[in-house]
Length: 261
Image: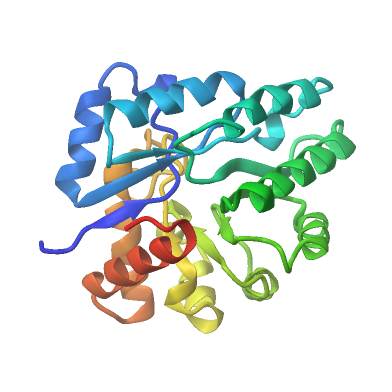
C-alpha cells in the first residue's frame, strides 16, 4: 500500500487507551495512518493532548477547546485559562472540540452559545480552523457562524451524520469540510447514498472519534485510529472510486483546512 491517510479526530489521550497505548499507536501506523489530530475537551485534557503530541511529534497533533458538554457555570474561567496557552507560542492546529450539544439537556443552552461564540472568535483571531461538534443544534450553530462567515478561517463539522439538506446547509460555509466516521459503515446509514448525491469528495475528511463510534465490523467495541481505514474503504465504495483516490483527496482536504501535509 503506497498511500497513507489521516484520522482528523481521535481522543487518543483518553483513559480508554491507557492499558495498550503504544500498541494502539503502532496499529494505526501499520494500517496506513500518517497523522492523528487530537481535540481537547476541557482544561485537563489540554495537557494530556499535549503530552501525546510531544511523545509522537509529526504524527500526533493537538487542538485546544472546551467541549459543549463540558460547559458549566464556570466556563469563562476555563476559557481564560485556555486562552493563556494561545497567547504564547503553542503547537495547537485547531480550536476544538467546540460547538453546541442539546441532545441530553438544554440546562446550559445560553452558556454553550456564549462559550462557542467566544471560541469562534479565537479561531478568527489566531487563524486556527474550528473542529465543531454539533448535536441537536444545527440551526443555532448555523445562525451563529453566519455572523462571522466572512472572517472564519474554515474547519470541520465533525462526525457528520445528517441528511442531504443538512449537508448542503453546512457546505455553504467556504473552507469547511465534513468529518465522516464509523457511522458511514453502519448498514442502516443513509450517508452511503446522501453523501455522493450532494457532497463532493473535496469537502470530506476522515475521522474515527475514537474510542467512540467504531465502524463495522467493530461496532460496539472500543474504536481506535487504525479503524479509519474502514471508513476510507466505505467512502471509496460509496463514491465509486479507488481507495487511493479517497486517501489522496482527503489528505489534500486536510492540507487545505489545517495547512498540514
